[in-house]
Image (cartoon, rainbow, N blue to C red; front, side, top):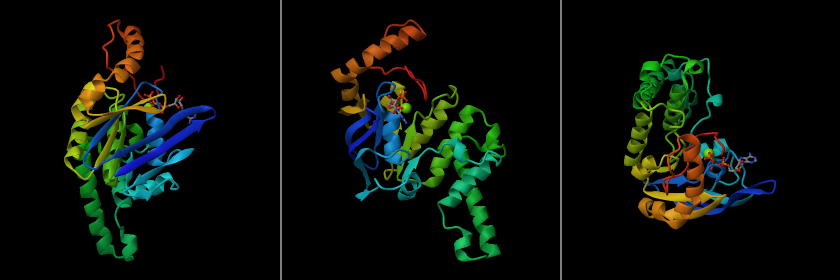
Length: 276
Ligand SMILES: Nc1ncnc2c1ncn2[C@@H]1O[C@H](COP(=O)(O)OP(=O)(O)OP(=O)(O)O)[C@@H](O)[C@H]1O
Ligand SMILES: [Mg+2]
């Protein structure tokens, strides 16, 4: 069980995440929704350790992770998509995934210098890396340099690296943002498959309400850094607080983009790095 208790962060006078207490059980997918700037990414950053909380705690299976760095939390089982800046751009896609797989296994160095075991480990690591690349539909590009990948493939690679880590908790922050229509189903299928493993806890920040409706077991809503709704998808989407929270933003967003009237209950269309 992943749990946040009164998790809070302040940037100067601004409280970006405000005393959020929530528990996420294994075998569930929780969608985190809310307007642009609501604090969703910041909440993820506090959980994964990219940001230190001003107050409150993060625990995983009863262990307090609050004092740990981001890499220590990764080792504890929290899986946050890699930033591609952490990769080796001059190495191939396959080599990068293989390094991620290797990082999670006991490597040959632990067993001393034994050529046979290095060779057989190398084969196993490559097999596992190939399997993951198949799953994210990147196998055809495995020999390309990471630096040369188009945006959609980079996002798939982020998911591949996350899978290589085999975390207990998967955190996806708008995993399909910036992808073209053909690429989106690959990532959604992967998340669907991950859901079948009942030992995994999945957190998904997503603006596309049809995706949320289909994948989520539960929706929580953040608004101005505060948790304002939490429950079954249908119930949360229909709740007055969600209708109200989204209506104004949707109206603006819809008229700015295509002139269609706002649809109550739908969050603003948005993507990574877009601010209202
Ligand atoms: N490092 C930072 N320093 C100062 N303010 C920050 C920082 N990170 C986030 N914020 C502010 O905290 C608030 C929440 O931002 P956050 O990125 O978490 O929103 P979000 O819900 O992920 O939005 P979006 O849907 O646009 O991705 C915003 O007002 C943002 O400007
Ligand atoms: Mg965000």
